[in-house]
Image 1 (cartoon, rainbow, N blue to C red):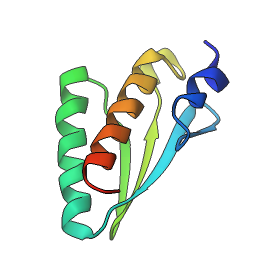
Image 2: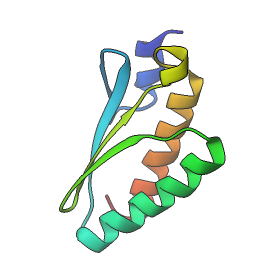
Image 3: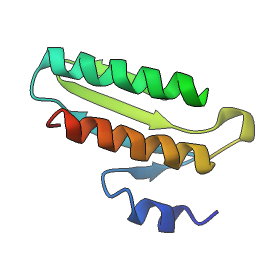
Length: 91
């Protein structure tokens, strides 16, 4: 898989080792929690769960496919969904 090519479609994400990472800054804390809630629903549907660190209105997200030992299509699919959710909430 050409990770650099995939990341061109996801400009907010960056590669760090076997993960892709992004920080989402929400307008306020309640919105940040709503974003996390919507991400959780999508992640559960895909059975693919990001690492999320919540710091006030900043969400630090990391994606990797642990059982595959690195990045897969699923990571990039969920990243695109996360981008859409963040945009919907003005983040």
